[in-house]
Image (tube, rainbow over all chains, first blue to last red; front, side, top):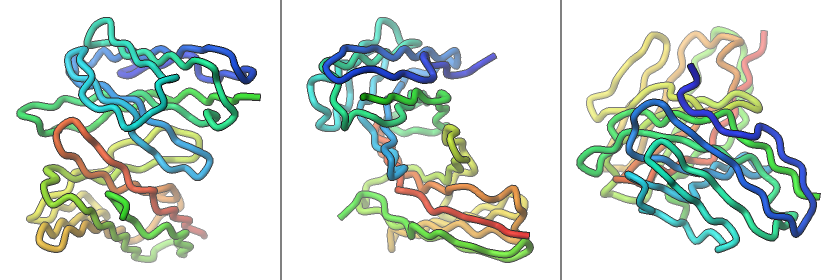
Length: 116
Length: 108
């Protein structure tokens, strides 16, 4: 049983294309995240959702549009892909109660996006 | 100033060595603290939570100093399998911030 699963694992696409990455968690967590890990391995938060509601948007370009149809899913759609979007994108989930993350964040295996 | 800062390393140590990692954070209102481990081309995974009273898990000891906004991780008797990147993680509410990580190489 995979706790946090994201698809696809690898994505190679041309500049200007639109692509989506899907994420699902079966842990019953209320909070889900998208992180970007660039070539320097720095893991940077992009979005945080709680119960399908956007809580944090870390000044991500509006070409990136997250969508949460229910609290178990958080998908990421990217329009007009650019070379600089090449990175590994990680989905994660955790349980936040009383606005404190009191359990670990579980990560998906990552989606390695390459824009050519 | 970055929200979470770590010594980037890399740390190259022989098996059996003791190695210490440090981390500082800028937001004094931060609420929870963790160390994560990330192996090459894998997702980050929780190593241990960090408490003000200090906590130990086998060869690993973590410490939090809220006054100095400082977190540490001590690894004793290093094993080859400890080679990885260690990420300092600070949380406030719905925002979880990762440090850039410290790379550890343990050699035979």
